[in-house]
Length: 463
Image (cartoon, rainbow, N blue to C red; front, side, top):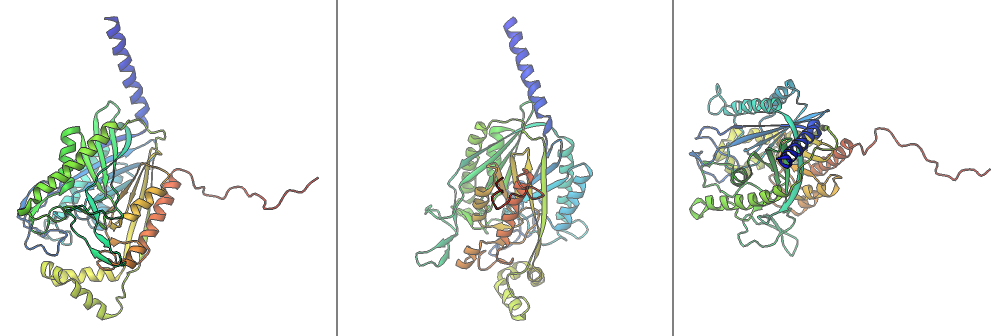
């Protein structure tokens, strides 16, 4: 009996100590469904004919709120092709600020099985779905913030071989689009890394697993008219069934990365391929999560920064012939969405892009960098090499959307998203990644606001 009491006392002391240590970082989680009504235009494929007919799996928004003794942050994962329109993002941030959340990072999974986001008056101007969905997300951010409690965190990485680089550089230096690669022919560059942030309550309850992986969510193709989160949704189902808590999918720099089983027709097993890919990714996430040791971060702080970038258009729109050429290039989208919407899109391209880049460091150990579009995977690999924090996640499709961001080298080679279907000036991605690397260093206090003390560049005088 005495031994049992001693063990019980020791266990209670351990839990109490863990809770005290975790007081510095608090975490809260909330979710909401954002599936639109059916018969909506769908995101992503110019070859798709018709509107959505049914729902295969619900589209979700998941919120993780984090706060320290100094600073706070909410990370929102959306099952959408891109984040909401700018005014709706600002509305969510304002709602968050009202409950003390200083920064919100809103990232989309880039599923091609979600709703088109170019129409704010669908299904009606009086009751637009996008506005209603954003309001639900704002409510979820508030709920997550109000539900924060002491938490412990940990980070781990794994590896999966599920994707390829869809711009194939041939022996003569020219490129060819390599959309599907069922034979798994080796390509490069590809980042096979799966990054996992584990968040538990101080009492040991599983709150959240954040999964960061770079691959287009396009296992299902344009023949599919069912709303779906694609393979990220299948992955989440596996993880949540085997782990508990909420699983977040945070898309990486997948601008030139496709699944091996890209655009599998439904008649050829598209749904089965989607589930298989999600299951394989989910099993690796579970393996990594089980090996992660969680602890209270040494620094009880959440530090974040945001810089707004002004980018010029890549193409010369001052010539009317350029505009007409663009319209001809987007003929398939005109047939799908109508000429007025496509002309509006081209007009926005001609004005360049004003987009944010966001960086946050939690507990002095975990970094999140948000980028507003389809960044090529080289950027993610480069930032991972340069980050002083190994626990770093590159969030594509975050806080805005300005299309494809190819590297300068990729733009010179050409291909989809590199020499066409891209609108921002060359070097835009490099600039944003540079600033992200600087922002991490600043958050860690590694870059001083004033120069160091001067050291003479000549020998001292001898007495």
